[in-house]
Image (tube, rainbow, N blue to C red; front, side, top):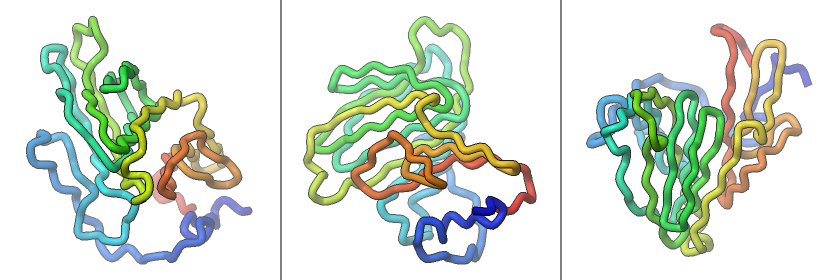
Length: 198
């Protein structure tokens, strides 16, 4: 397959939609000025995606991070471009997530978690990434909660002349992510120079 002609929508066998307009994502209320909520928006038909938060924050050691809070009926994916995050939850998981890693929390019938800085950190740290909420299928909304951690090195990276594609969830060009989603979802990080055509 000629990479320049590659079209993800055709490859995934889903209908293509034309981009009608580009809009700046609004700032989330109550989350500070550095969190932009891309989903939900005026755009429809994005199932199973519920929320997509793009954040770039400076974490200060004294801030304490995001306190414990509940989730149910969804899966949350945290993917960082820069910095680190500490995930702790009611199942006893305590995991440092670095840039390029995937933290996949399957809330199921209910889980409580918090997000913050590593212990013993004395300097502020920039944390830039995405948090994506995916709705679980109706039959799986009340399954046991779970947490999965995928280090960056376990995620396939496809190198092409004009681009690199990290397969975070799903499969592309014969490369399958180890991330197992109960809802069909495709999540890729694509890096390419400006004005490049895929």
